[in-house]
Image (cartoon, rainbow over all chains, first blue to last red; front, side, top):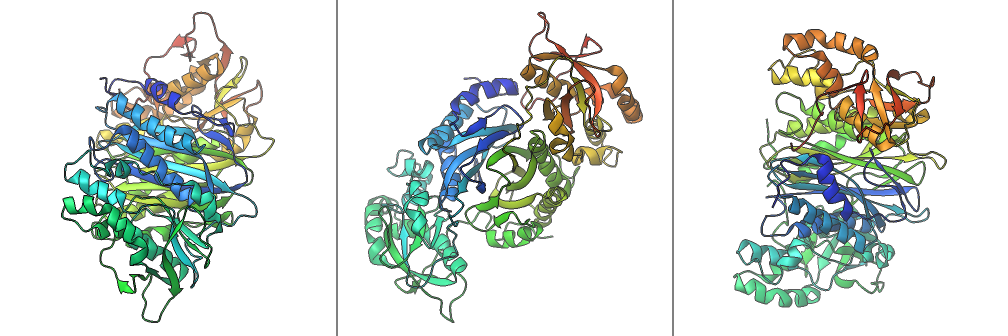
Length: 318
Length: 318
């Protein structure tokens, strides 16, 4: 298997670029100084997120295709969470010279395939040298002239908190299996490349008062939504019980508590949204309610059946 | 000096975000899942480029502010080189937990200040952990409905090749000084954070037949322009002699040839453009001419007074 150590950049690009198919909205794709993309409106939605080997993924516990897919999902989910349809991405790949060309091809394929599932084009990139493999993706979409972005700040007392996923916690369960050495564990594939229904963001999620994607766990992200909206959120143990039950076998095999998975699983990238009473649309399911902030509440109070939850979700540096 | 090892992401963001001022076109800045920016048109221009410690810069040979400024310049130059005005950037910063908070603040300030000089807003970002400091920036701009992108492919025989810089080669000269341990060398500051006139791209450069920014050296990039346009380019020794003369003292102090600096200096980020005969606008100066490709020419033939040039410019992995 050849490494990239002796390949010229033009040779590398020749191996990678064929994986990137462009939609009709791409006026100019990879190969020049910048790409040109025709957006459906002039109101750009833009986000960026990086994955770094060792910090965000471990080789060979994941596959190059999954790395690419995850890098796509985490960015497309951020655009979707604003209520906007993602349209294009650019990617900056950094890699050690010893990296196998097949790894970069796999990452590119995984990225492009996951983007293509949503009609998103990979329109440009950058290749450079680093000691660790890393992949920084920027995704863009657009909002129509009369469309408000769905921010984290619009939840109101009386709203229903809902999640756009049939099952929460698989990413944490898969990570636990992976760290325990069970690379073929039931939830490892989901951890390596979660596949939430992102179209809920620009579809049914447009009816939400507030929305975000679940990156750092339900407790942490829900707390952010509560803080941004100036409300308290009370999660319902009953509404999340099926998730805990579904993950119980995996948890018990590792002497873990399935509720830790459900409440703190990062990198699910499902849509977390607050809808008006009775307004939870298909694809979402209720998991709690939004209440008036009380004098004793700090910023971002999030409870479970009225009680404080321990654990903080994912922190990069702490 | 505190490191970031014990800071929560919210604390980090609180230190960094105040450096990012937003223009009136920013409907929603950092803090939500994605930013929303009102573009002057729906024709998006987008590019991404990363800088990685060890590969693209060395600490303490450069300053955090310079790293941020260089990350800005290399991306803004790519948008400018399409003939488009840059409008906004997003940035993914990865850093070891031992990184001083002041370093991240300096990078952010350098990035934001250089963007602000061109009226560009920093609208979003991502912070994560890595063994090496790295900064991946994506810049966006827009083209008007009736504006063609200025690609690399439009140069025609008879055109004049021109550069939007009064002096070429300083980045290579500064790198040589830096690698020789002379951190206060005359050209080190330019190498660490070049400051070409980017406004030539969306200004006078709009009249060019072809344009690109000088990232990997005149010979390599000029060869790319020649290849994309299907022409040969002949650089003029007489027109570049003043550059070599200006860099001669720095070169001779290191027993180097100033022509190596002039011909191969990477990371100048000046606009390299081909204009119709007699049409070189103010801010650009002629450095060669575009000729018909000949049967014996390979792809991307670039000559100096009709003779082949040795050296290939910058390669990341070779």
